[in-house]
Image 1 (cartoon, one colour):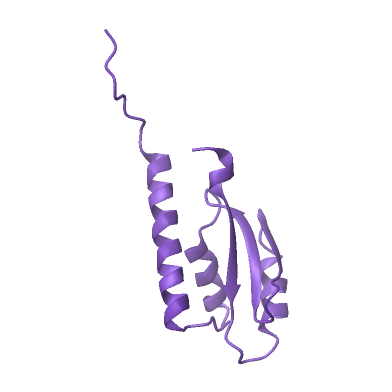
Image 2 (cartoon, rainbow, N blue to C red; image 1 turned 45 degrees about the vertical axis):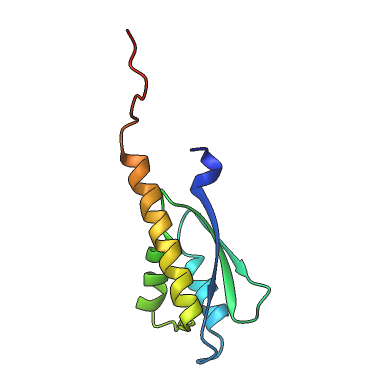
Length: 106
């Protein structure tokens, strides 16, 4: 696994109400170390760039929900989130697992 595989670029989409969530979320997330953020091209979203050894998408979204931000909750976004959560969890588990030798040396 290359170091580039560990750096993730994700988008968080917020519900339309309450207004100004994007600006407030950017202000909140800017206080976190080792996290890059910015306004997305969509008007209700932000982008995040992070290393999964520091954060996961699930942790970042839980932080936002814990601060009373309202994420987009349509079926598409729920499925999208679940897939990202799963793949990052597997990737972290694989990082912790010892490498297996497939060919025995004599």
